[in-house]
Picture: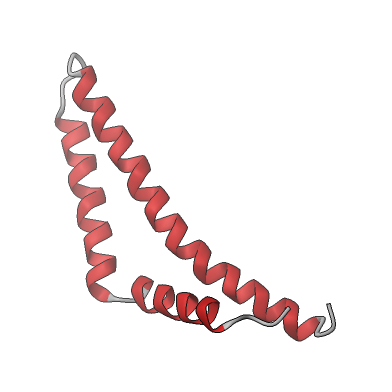
Length: 86
């Protein structure tokens, strides 16, 4: 199944994004900040700790979604090369 122009553009955009130094720095800084806030919060601050935990999970989901666009594009290319008539 040949990839259309939009799929190729999305894969290219996502690849540029995850390799961008500012993108990488942003995710590292946010993760570190959230982890510091979580470790410095008291055990009685349940609402704050839960909010920080949710923010960390959301950060993982955002990054995972962008990476999945790249991986799906790569998998489609491999499939197309190995099985061009499927």
